[in-house]
Image (cartoon, rainbow, N blue to C red):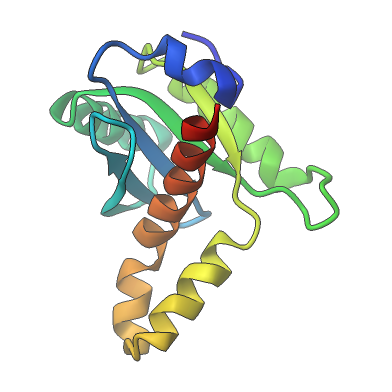
Length: 154
């Protein structure tokens, strides 16, 4: 399956297929999944990044377990809308991941997702240690929920 526009993602999903949301960091990958109705994103896990092949295998297993039919990957666009080296890295990760999973992949502008999630966790008076444990998977859920909301409007 190819990389598709978000507007084409729903049509590319198998019936009942869920979406997996990824927030790619340099050291971790935040992971979230949605319900089969494509309405609600839920944080799942944070994967410590290692060798790409091992990471891709872990994601492939999770995709099979959760009956995932497509991926939404956060794209770290600059505040001015331009794409820098981090976007290139995320796009390359997606291309490489297609060698392990045959699913449609769409990107979602993730500007300020981690900032928004961190603010929410601070307002919830969560400790610094606990915030560090959950921020990546919460950011993945924030990214996926934004994409789900956009899909619902189309």
